[in-house]
Image (cartoon, rainbow, N blue to C red; front, side, top):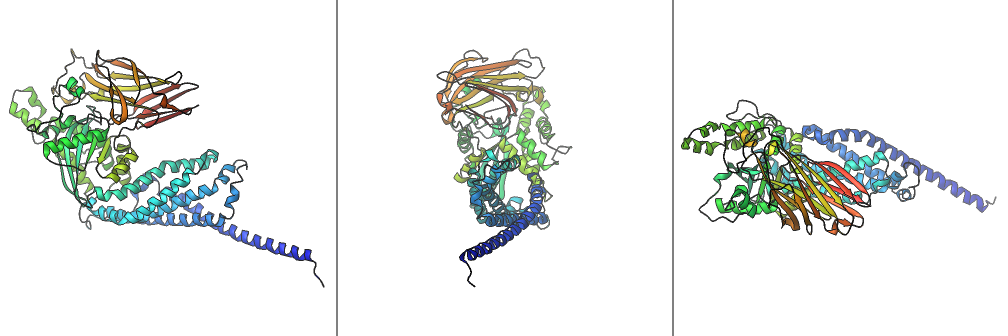
Length: 631
């Protein structure tokens, strides 16, 4: 019997369809298995990888977290491999109702997910020995915590370099992802990734750079500045104490603190001060305690390094500055400290009270009451010891870190990160790679005008007192984009909350009757407003007569400056009106970058922009802020 060709063709088609069905079915079964595994793994991983819970990880938890990341990476890679033949078709399905955007973005979403899983697994593999060193029991521990952590950090470098390369691929895949068409659920997941991906990238880079900074390749020395933001200065506060930190292979060779007044060596010629310091504080030379005058921290750090070398003959590899808020956050994270000469446990809530009490009555010297007498020797003795609390506090913190007791890692990490993000800690180092990392994170205190509009308000207390805790402040910024040149109006509102009545404002250095009394004095404030280069000041009000000037600033900025004096209970409104360069508006887009002054709190801020349309923003300057208006 002769078989007709059409039946042969039909048979072949049926066989092909059956084969295709079996192939698709087997793929579907494999995909279903991986999806089921994924559904079981993700909730566990999300709970274990929560940043707030990372500090409580034990060795067993860490192993489980690694296993989850391994399973996640394998499942996602398998899903991508199984779906590869169909992925090109998803690009054509954006029209599907509700989930069309998700389907269309499936290839990019899979690339991002696989990359995150692989980078997470690689990072954990690299950091596992570090966790073991951190959690080493006191009986088995040899050397300080930093010494124990240095070898694992060096060992982890190859794995961390691989993780960094994987994160770079994730970042590229994320850049190709258009989130505007994603469903709300997927959009929220991508937004969460956008929050944590830079942090993970930063942590991986920092872990690679840490060995050099800790002295793995040779000794390192750092100048440590204690900045008192109760007496606000450009980079965070008056430099009350100066420390020298020496590290060698992770070991703290030296950590000494001294009164900033004790650093000066007046037998050597010092540079001239910035003109405002001469004019408003009668400072005839520049000394180290006043050398953080420039809000661009690298500029101030260079002056500080040169003065420390001049006065002490010591060259340093970097400068670290921390204010009182950073101390509160650090002590709060570490938990109660038992400190010499103080009966109560010291916490984040009472550490400032501890410092004030030790300042007024140092354990090794007479109390502040000697200033009510005429006994010069006792006064000198109090002056020598009034800042001993800095060394006592630092020794207490180091003792807690080296005690071998369980440390709240997550609280400690987030306290440090918040201090850096909110500019309560600034770091400048010589190492080019580390400097680039700090700059990218915004932790080096550099002025960054960027493109578009820029605003930084800098208050400097030049009144020889601690009045800043009594000062409330707010910022209102209005920009009109009509006409030939954009126009700006900046309003600064100040309120001195002290209720003490003073007969007159004394602008001279003196201690008075107590530390509290120094807070209740008049506020002498030298105000600088940093704006884009090419801005032209048209009008200013609220300053003292004949004090307003326009100057060239760091990093190519323009500065409008003025001086004001406020008695307790007084309110003051300072207004600056000026023209902006036309470049603040580009292709129908207005961008404003507002930089926060280090050492300040979350100042209330209102921004109003008018032009072809109107926009208003309300925020706080806890961190730098950026605003974008498009027409």
